[in-house]
Every structure is written in structure tokens, then in C-alpha cells.
Length: 444
Image (cartoon, rainbow, N blue to C red; front, side, top):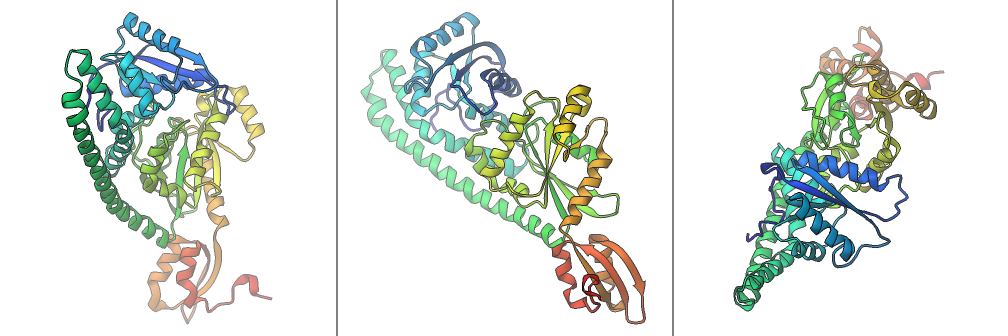
């Protein structure tokens, strides 16, 4: 596929060359708890995660974006001057640009890469995706991002040729349009191919997920803002060896581990991609199959960085994404993590205002016992009590009750093993034919 070297392309990774970046933010008077300074601080962390160094920032207050260049003409000239002054090689906008806005800005900044927030996050995802599914999901999102920008790419190519003395019509209008259609056709073909591959991969994931559901194992999903410490918490709870970095989106691929509760119950806990303010919709769609783990979990542990000054805004951002993937309304426990980094007076205030939350530190392991007890309590809420007589010829059912349920009483009789235990609905359904004993709640 023909590309412009300034353009964002699939699997292009900024970290290959250390770019000097100018950040551009627009204040439009948001009322969601996020100030422009917070957005730009997060954009700087994203830029750092991608491997670039921030050398300057330009901001503007606007009621609505400029349809041609997003920011005003004067601010665009200010950005160009700052690029010259600092030797910047990259300009990153905190908001999404339309294809025409991006093309117009690039014309004002020759030889400078221009990325919007979505392109930057896609670049980071490409850097961190490890599994085949993760790489396919990222490439799909990148290709769908690139497709509507192909016309601007070719228009820029033609204008650049004219500026250098080349003929505009030859090789741009005619052949250029032909090449544009070829590129579009190739891009659409690749998108369809990626969707087919992802559909097959998601089938395998569905098989594994449905097998866990049929097994009756209580399923837990870790959700939360990126860098809230979900992977650290997973490691602390399960002795897993999941990558932990103080970077945004260090973990992309869903990781499931076994978690045994103190009472002996076996559960599974899954760590998935962290969310972020203004998470690109294309990424949410591309990662929908992975996020099914969140939607179908029996319990969500919403992990929050207690030490973050915008913790409440981050909670709201996560809730918005959960709603977008139809995962809101599921049983959820709020887990404030990084309590070891939170000042005592702020921690006391949080505990007073969030009495139903659990407070932990994945690093020091403080509060993990209380968290495990809370998980056990939540797991018990969905259970049913069974009173069954298992023939001695069905020993595998006794093992199933011990492995997947919580035994209350067990008695060996002449007819078989008399069990009273609690289990999830999935397990309970497998004992229907053995309910020869009257359930306790129906006894007089």
C-alpha cells in the first residue's frame, strides 16, 4: 500500500526513532471532572509510553474546533513556530482529527508527523500487543483508522509534487486516483481478512470461556483505568507472573489465572486491557471479543488507584466504557489499590465515603485477606443450597461437589453419600437427578 512517510501506518512504532513532540490541547469547557491540564498530563504519559520526548505544549480555548485545522489559524502558526524553535519532529493532538484537518495541518508542517489521540494510542497498542489475537485486533483498528485518510494522503502527495515543480495532473490526478482506489480496495480487503481471522480466534476464546461457564467455576474480571495496578493485584492474589510496568497500557492481552479462596472454593480471575479517558471507539470495537471476559464475568473487581487525584473521574471513565460494551449492571466490588501511596487523611476520607469498597495494596499485600473474604461473600450470593443423595457408583459427582461447591455436611449412608452443599447454578443443574432428599428450606 502506498504511504506517506509522515502518515501513521499499521504497526509503525514511534519508539524506533526518539521523536521530539509538541502536544496540542483544546479547552472546550468540559464538565466531566477532567480539566485540560489533566488531559495534557495523560497525553504526555501516552507520548512517553510511545517512546517520544515532549519538548513543548500549545493550548487554546475554543467553543468548537476549527473545521480546517481544528485549532485556530493563529494557533496553528504558533505550533509551526514552536516546531522550528525546538526541532520537534512530531505534533500530537489530544483530540481526534478529521482526515481533512490532519491533511491541512500536515501541509502547514512539512516533514513533521502529525498524530491525533487515537493514532497515538493505536501506536502504543501495536507496541504492546503480544498474542496473535491482540496483534490482529490492533491491526484491524489501525486499518479502519487509516482507510478514510487515504484521500488526504494522496492529496498531500500531489500538492507536494506541485510545490517541487512536478506536474500536478500527471501521476497525481489520473494515476493518483487509480492508485487511491487500489489502496482503498487493498485496505478493505485486509480489513475483511482481519475480521475473518479474528472471528476464528474469538471462536476458540468462546469455547474456552463457555467451558469455564459450564464448569461452574466462579469467574472474576479485573477492570479499571490503565495503570491502576490490576496486573500487580493479579500477581499478588495468584502468584502469577504477569508483566508489570509503570506505563499506560502495559497489559493488553487478557490473562486468566486460578484463584483459590480460603474456604477452598476454586475461582478464576482475568486481567484485561485497562481503560482510559476518551478511549477510541475503534479500539473498543476491535477488542470486543477480549472484553467479553468482562461482560460475562460473575463479578467485576473495579480497581482504582487510590493515590490518584482524579480517581473519581477515572471511575466515571471506566463506567462509561463498561456501558459501551454492555458490561454495566454486573455485580461489582470497588477495590481501591495503591493504598500504600495514599496519604492517611485521604485514605480515611475515602473509607468514610466508600464504606462498601475494599482497600488494598498489591505491592505490600495489605488488605488482600479482606478482599478474598469479600470475593467469597459475593460468590456465595449467587449460589443455591443442594441436599442430595449420591449413589456410590457416582463417585465423580462427590468429587465435583467438593471441587466446585462448598460442603456443609457429608454423611455416608447405606444408599450412598448424603451431601448438603452450596454451588453455582451451573453446577446445581448437574445434580438435579440426584435430588432425592428434600431440600432444607422445604422441610417442616
